[in-house]
Image (cartoon, rainbow, N blue to C red; front, side, top):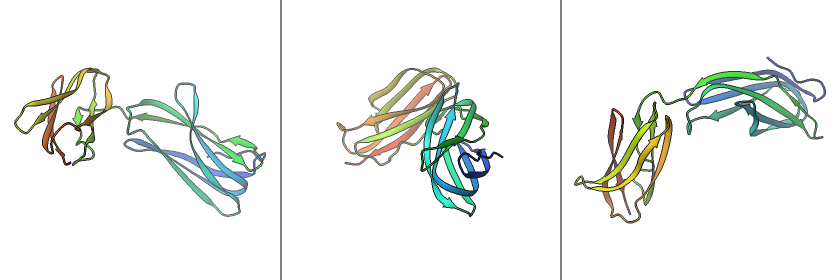
Length: 196
């Protein structure tokens, strides 16, 4: 629990963080607010504070107000400690910080996976996502329905984590195609549909 000092007249009654599968959700409440423009949500990873969002306040209010913000980690794979804080602003430009919350998270890739491309069906560009628990050589190729190789999207060393690749099928005819990933002891194939 944390409270802002009386310099900025907002009574913060709670500030908590909940870790989900690929996100951290911050929830906070105020018992009263006077002249509250809103809150910057700030995050610190590795000794550097960054502002990740701004949530508007309720101006002047004598009732309890609840706020929430979700920090989504679905596009990367982070493991470690993250520190969050709120910077509250009033309409006169004054500001104050909340207490800090430390959260330990592990959003790193736990296993090899190849996701279904999105969108599917597509025309003419789609995104293919895959996860690697270990760094290594990755091959990602597209084949036609007769098994002939159409193109190589990836053929290089990739770091452990989550990756995305765009596939542009502008030069191909409508139809069913397949994409196959190979990395270490993992390989998988999925179907994609090009509809022009």
